[in-house]
Length: 129
Image (tube, rainbow, N blue to C red):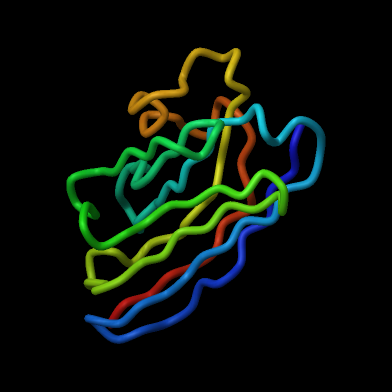
């Protein structure tokens, strides 16, 4: 099991940048595939970025490609999301979440992860105006 705590959200003007961090505690983080997900108001959850357990392969939603970068540091028990050129449509609550590699979702399919599965943080608000 892992416990996840996000930080780094806030308010920013369109075109600006934010860096989200996820602090991870628990066992075997190096065996977890991780992702960042967002939930805009009155819309569905969306997977925006995912990364394989070894941190070497990343996947992105088309809406954020070229603007967002996900990275995983298993030694520091952390996950980050660098968000550049933010737009109003990026406004949402952002969550980090993950599943153990044995769950069979360590691919682009991880972008389809939803709160009923895996481990999720409490979320951090990002507002772009």
